[in-house]
Image (cartoon, rainbow, N blue to C red; front, side, top):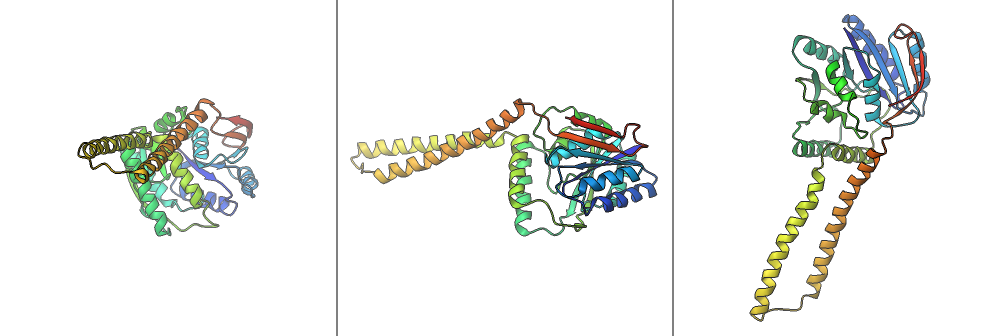
Length: 320
């Protein structure tokens, strides 16, 4: 059995060597044949230089370098495409996903008839209260919109080759790996882990990046927000009928009064709802526009492999 461990890296010069050493030693100790696939997501520090040295000095490292920053989702799918293993594990480079949990995942996969082993957080580590509230709200929205349970889910998971091949065959450009790995529908099991403190450096997710990630993930995985437009239309139609009946009654009974301020208020409310609805529709149209252009999810500038993994050590300028 060969296990591929996919590790996206963005400005992780302080972590890549320690992560490779920690994960590699753990897997070797447990007699698990493996390859470590680091995907450099357009880092601006010395991450790529360190990955090159690691690939040349080690015997199980694959270094995939993007031409620029394409995002974590693209890095994950590039790793899945490059993986040769019978199973793949996706984990973060900062060791907040405990490497020891990989061994548990492998045992669950080998001893049970499952194709996906989900890593779920039993504790979320050091997170602000606002972040935790936002996270729970996000997962509730995803569950309500798609029917997939994702509370405390993470990108930390093991996928059988069958599941990896299914994901690699998906042509869509805008992906949400955390949900798609459950959407493929294969048999799954769950293991729980405690989020460890970050080994080196600061987290790369800012508030604005998290909001953008959440919006992109929801829009790429469900069309539920479009139903808000329909809902608003139904609510205002009902309100309009009630108001029309009330107006006719007042007119017939001679109680009709001038309502200039009411008319202006209604126009402002309806106008804001219309603009909000057009914004949602426009956002989905922009995503359709991105998809139909069929630009690649990522562009690979260079792939460097340890010599025993491939006779051809370098493969330049590939794209997917």
